[in-house]
Image (cartoon, rainbow, N blue to C red; front, side, top):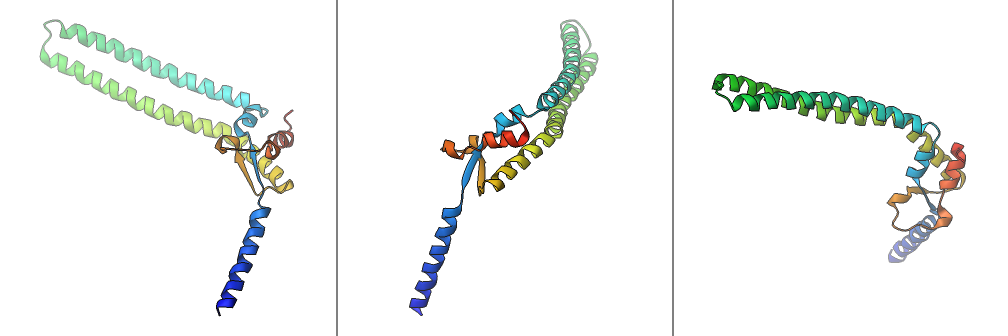
Length: 167
């Protein structure tokens, strides 16, 4: 019984070692290839335009807040009644809350827009990586930024560029 168990363990060890030796690892400079993809500059420009639109609205809101704050400060330095100051203070607080809500929602909208615009490029890049990895029999392909050490011989970046038609 012990002999049989030992034989099974040795057989499993041999099989596992064989699989481990067949694993092939490669890496790609994902960020660099992404920046070089045709059309990515158009997507990035659209994202920048969208960001500038959001910033313009945010700046208008901030300017309005500063104006109201200056009015409140002027009123506070005079003999204005506390009831009027309280109303102005409430207006300021509502405006500030609205500004905070806008900033928060615009950050989320910008992230959503970025994912929407870049998703087709990411999908094309991942498909190209998969094609190259399957063609060259790689088991795993990592982004170069995730590798502590890499061998230049296993750099698939040039092959992925070729697959995407990037020169």
